[in-house]
Image 1 (cartoon, rainbow, N blue to C red):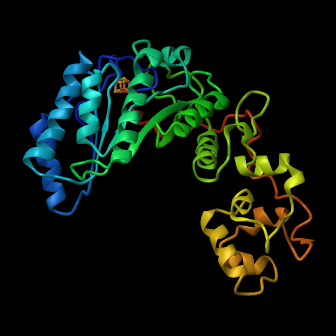
Image 2: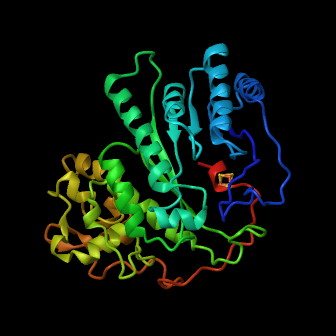
Length: 357
Ligand code: SF4
């Protein structure tokens, strides 16, 4: 269950319909209401976990206290031991981050953009270097330490997350992914979320161009390569503008830039190299390795049965010395040449991005 404890807010995030000047009806929930409403839904089998976020009306510390009070009721009085994700508000105090980390399964703090200037361009009250990043790192350190020590009270911790509003401040994917890669390498971040900026009528940034959804998709794909496929940040391929190419997914872009590694021998390649083949994920790589010992793999059809996307993978694979496809895969997004904005979505939301993740 996703709950925004209040949509009242004194901040001026330019992309957000509930910014301080937004013409939306404001409302708020007392900690007791949050806890009892969730528990009712939980007992009826309608909700297994809670995601709690909020706007920042007035002092962030006061609102953060109300959110923590909701969690205290849930954990202490109601005895709920399931999944709770809480958002640390900009301006929260160190002790509140510590308390959130103690009460919640997952803590997140939205960085919004990868540096001071970019964040200021989005919301003049938010402070990347002095507030957002240190709070995320503190929550990350606490989650890392508690995972290492195994929480004494038996409550699991799921690590921290963050979110970026993509494309609104002129930031480059290289900067965003560089920051994400560093935090994940130091195990201070479990994973990152990306929201493609969409202008919302009535907000300070209503006239700014929206970001194509495919840019968000490429960021997610690149982040998966860093986190689950063993890629280093330095291996990611960026265009001259510092952004990921839109036409190809990041793994295909890397493979096309490194023809010296291909084709890869399906029958002998190790797991970590199979994972580098476009169209081959962890499940398919494991299936190929398990099956090639037991059965004779004859061609693309056999690989498809194991979950390999041969339309993308065949050019990079060989069986008994023969490349499975002579030509590289067709570009995936010829319709949307690099740098060109997609048509705007007619969908206008009255909910801020922070209400989702
Ligand atoms: S994004 Fe969150 S903090 Fe910013 S104006 Fe909207 S509700 Fe307030």
